[in-house]
Image (cartoon, rainbow, N blue to C red; front, side):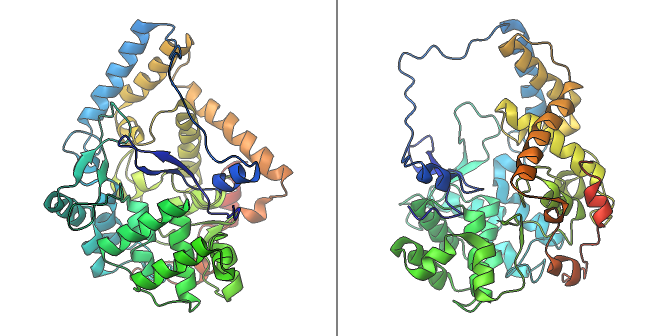
Length: 414
């Protein structure tokens, strides 16, 4: 009803808990502007998906399954299955790229308290669920069910981005406090990344102190009450920061940064700047080769990252269009047969004759369409830039700044 820029579209999880979101970009506000409250999908009597060539489909899915069950990130007992996406907390903190207290530092020893390893152990004690699937049939099962200490009142999954945005970025290193903030975001229908960055900017602007979980909950309650403060907060990080006179506002094209500081990991910064969506990590996940050693091994401090960001953005746009989960990318970046399997499965469903070489072409068509929309909406190359503080303020402990040139950024999609 507030048409807030951080409003999302909620989906139920397999247990019926409303905890899954198409969160970024304000899709909830788009629905609200049309007076659309909800969408019901009823499969009764539906014909299902027609598979044109079942043999090709089976051959392709078998190849993909083999890749997923062999790769260290996606296999049973692997990183995602054991610790969920929060496995990245310790990894990024060690790399000095886990933003703390509104991007004022890239590392804090307290981050271990909210890591995937610590969370998995606590879930086991409480009788929650880990691993868990968000979609029936998933072989990765990176999800979980986080509960209160007594094992009751499940909040759903505490993803890496949520734990970071509502946790480390706000100076909060308590999983229960983060869980309640996550629950409040779900109830309010707002994106957790945008909400966390907005809270951090609000803390820097003096509305409450860093580390104050109760104060952060009270700020979210302002949104629920539709107070003047709440109406500012619900419109996100950039507007809140400007209203409060904060100079450290981590946004591109009005959308807040995710959980990777681009000063420590230059390739992800190129993606933040150049993706048509605004600051977004999933658009071209350079963390894979820069930090995780997946799909190659690149120096995260090397500013020459236009090519890797472009290639990842093209591949990701195509993968997103298939409906496959983005997490299959870890396996297919290292195991070529996995990508072949995806293409073959598509051919089986569609009766098409696509090849692996078509993937970047399809991605380019999608991104060209997005860029054309942005240009028509008034965006120019000036908007494909990171905020000044990222280029001027040194990030402890590495003391890096974002030193990728404008020419490098402009070359991504020229």
